[in-house]
Length: 396
Image 1 (cartoon, rainbow, N blue to C red):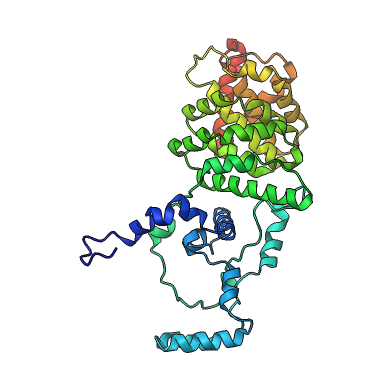
Image 2 (cartoon, rainbow, N blue to C red):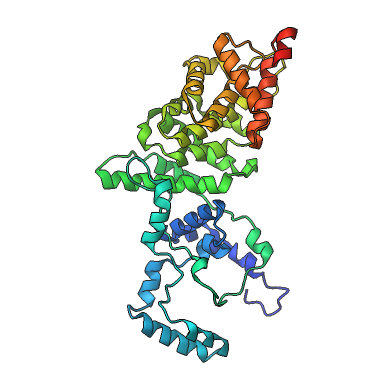
């Protein structure tokens, strides 16, 4: 960086990738408040918030409100006058600040406002948020002509994916912490675990790069999650726990084989089908469907799913059909029928009612708007047809 000839200097972008900024020690120096702000911004962006920029999601550019308050006084009018005076000495363009007649915090959503906005969706059984709501986000609708004090990022830079750095051994250590103590202590432990898992969701959702998942599996993340699914009180297992597992297994068979070899996830995932939260059940079904797909990989058309006996051993088939019959949620019904179809690969469904109802529903969703439902339902029908007689196959 200090070389005079620019050909000998590393670029600014390469410098920001240096271990000084991205190493483990550097990550430890980033406060939890900053990490929470970046994570919440990433989540909001994925949910379609167009006001979120690269600066909002990168911890290197985030300055929490608590630090801002240490710099600014309580007298907002004095702060405006002082800042305006200093800026006018350097650039006459900043005289447009004269147009500002209100607080320097106009256009910024307060902590309580942001909390209220996200409370309804992220409220859980024990009274905490799935995503920390204490985030200050810009509300562009309240600023008619925003002043461009920071140069705009190039379009290609805005669109690039954010590489989220996660220390998986630390994640496992946090997941191993039992939820004990008084109500406040339990909430804090739960929040800490959810925050780590939401990072995993942000990193792997819709990301099909297998190699990036290996460190998480080898560190024991999926193994620890499976233990939680089997043993923890269901009320304390919230969507981030299951969704993080879902996106780790959302890859090619090699990764699923590694996960299955370390610990069979089915007992825990099937236990979650009893959960009262439809979102938890939905993510569980998708995880089950993903693992069942592994059981059909590289087998002959006439062979049964490799995981059939494992699931049958704890009455998993009846649990799936029971959920299929009682649920009023379309996504749950779709996913459970697809799981049954994958499970009975090249096998006759012995229960006549199960066979008729599942096949009928699968046929009804082959033109569904959702791509996964559409393609998976067709595959399920094909799997079921591989062991039917010629006459029955015509009816599938």
